[in-house]
Length: 144
Length: 144
DNA sequence: AGACACCCTGTAGTAACTTCAGGGTCAAGT
DNA sequence: ACTTGACCCTGAAGTTACTACAGGGTGTCT
Image 1 (tube, rainbow over the protein chains, first blue to last red):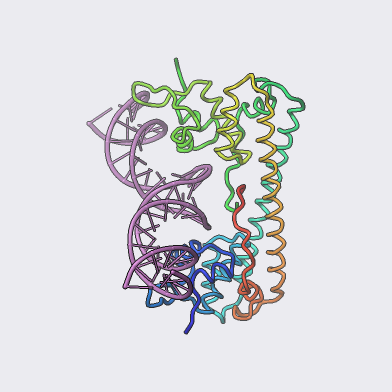
Image 2 (image 1 turned 90 degrees about the vertical axis):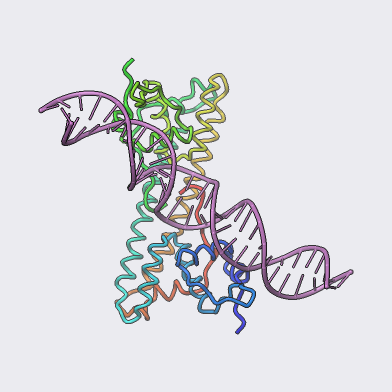
């Protein structure tokens, strides 16, 4: 049994060692076997699980979403409609965030345009505009 | 001297009381005067500063960016090129993030499309695809 | 006095990491 | 055997921008 060390896994997946440990600590990734020296020893199955998690993260899925998918994987005979639902929900969120950012960009570009020539800070149209009554804040949407 | 209480300000700007306190605690907003009962008492100038901060936040600007703008405002005779630079930098980041999310969306939609009919979880194309070797992770960009 | 709405401070939690501190293991070289 | 350097380990704390909680005070009206 020659498992892989955490550093090998980290290099293979281009993912920091600390992140792998973090995933284990938060329960996203199960704890692997240990060597006599107390080093983590990852099986291929473990590596596969990390791959799954990293793929999901690359798609900006939250840990919660990933957990749900991992749970669904534990019931192989169930229908995959729930999987679809999660992906679709996530798609909706990403679309929503794109929309928000586009709106935001419009506001920023309008702001940038308001300054059409160099002047003193005290006459800066950008700062003046920012000084007006605050609109309701956009805040942070659930998807980043 | 009849200043405004924090709750009035919060309602006026549609911003939580805790957030205003948070801004004060982190130094973004200066501490206001106090009543005999130790209640915060905000002047109009203070309200204006909060408006400024909230406007910036609505544009998804970071506290760091806002601090820089606030610093620039303290030097009214300086040229406003630095203000422009911050806005432009921020615009670039927002554009970058939009691009990232669009890419992400493409991947998600491809994933969603891979499941074209109901099947068991064990045969789910989505989960299979997620199980493949992880690509380098997109990670979190500086702008959300 | 009691009730209610609001205020206060300090702490801790959220999400997803990342860094730091301090110490152990392993393998190769001297 | 000792040294060195790369890697490993754990636990705690930091990052960002909030938000919630706990426990207590203030002000107004009945």
